[in-house]
Length: 638
Ligand code: BES
Ligand code: ZN
Image (cartoon, rainbow, N blue to C red; front, side, top):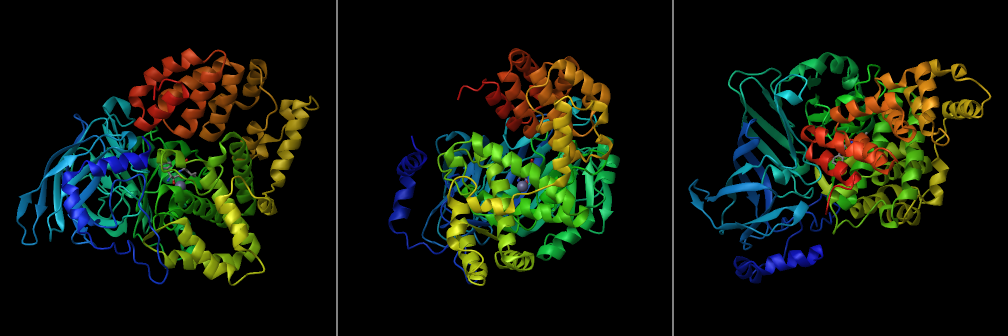
């Protein structure tokens, strides 16, 4: 059944809803903006009726059981009720055991209220429907998460480098509902408090204020988040963590085995924050720390406010993969401060962030590095645009009937970024920076839709530069599939890459020997460009020659290693396959594992081998990595 119909059927099934609905006064605007109206609609990926009731503050009290793999306790929700007569609260849940629900009266007395879980809507989970008596502004829910919670990964002692258990959350896009019953939509923002008890020998950290830099003796940790955030930014982790300070407001947490390398790799963090502030205004979240997760973390990074998560696969030893840190930090403005109201508007988060990331990289390492990274992104984007359906070639996409997980592709990231490059190119950097800074101030701590951005752009930038850019051009970027013609005004160029192209051509054309390639001068990005651009499939003999010359199979840089392993599959190159096996058993970062499994599944030799490796790797994978690998291998029956 289409989603909207399903949703409608659900509401019809609710006898308790009817009386309340009939006498309902007209809805008031959802998010009052200062002088621009914010047109937040309902979010197709949440059951929350947030225009009528909305969470203002949330207090968690949880016990973490590392053996049973559960978080259990209660959450108190403080509510705003813009439509006081509306007597129902619908929350998002998925795989939660709900035990009791109480309404807390203003005098503090708690009374049990009726509630029930609606039917199961797959990845959207089950709505928790609670009767909300008049005048009630606080609700308490006693609940527990399940071991299979999609938004949590539990690792036992044998699965970590510290030899101690580890747990971390990944709430974006819609997995917060697997560990807290709440309004799981980026349109709603709230502050929170949390008390969490874990084992005494481990440390609990959260994306919040109050992190302790050392393990305490009680195992109980308290947190407070004074800035209002959307649910997808809720983050918790528990493990054998150490902390190293990097600057007055920055530092890094990691398991003991990673901490020194991590601290050395990320020593520019404080400088990056300063650069961000110089560009687009104050950093408004107090501290900014990084948490290095085990290699099973399914992403490169996650911008959890005050405590961003990163994969250890960016610790290359030479700072060459720090663009990812710049990216997560940049989200402190684009995404965390000004937030997409629904996942259709994801480009507002990710496109702005990739642009901002490139500006930080340019300020730190110069124009050349920026151009190399831009060219890699451009080439990757063109390739993606050729592969995906027309509906996915667009910045703003209708995702109402789809898993929002599918919103995360190169298009909102890189096409979004090039759209910003293009605006900068048209009006000049000074004017564009002034506009962006004002945009972040104007919409700070609000969730907005593409249309809100478009109105603001029209009023503040296009109106001031009508001879430079037009709304018609902007709409081509936003609403038409593929890169518009005008995008080629800003096609990135890198002389360093042109040289690599020359060398590669000469070597593959038999004009020069491998040993003559001037690789000692190459950046990691030149290496990537070299490997991506190799003509045709390499045979095992050529792979062996390259290994003899460059020891690629021993690469410590995971971006280079990944590209090499992809070539390994094509060539059925034995030493590479051995490394591939250990790689798949260790790393759960989907950007690497999903294409590797896909390539194996499509190869002449690798399909059954890949399934066998996957079965062994599976217990150590995050649910998201499992899901993507199963899809790649054709093991999912859905
Ligand atoms: N917000 C994303 C992480 C994310 C992606 C969460 C998909 C949920 C679904 C994060 O900021 C991000 O974009 N990470 C990228 C790195 C970036 C440099 C492109 C990643 O993890 O690869
Ligand atoms: Zn991002």
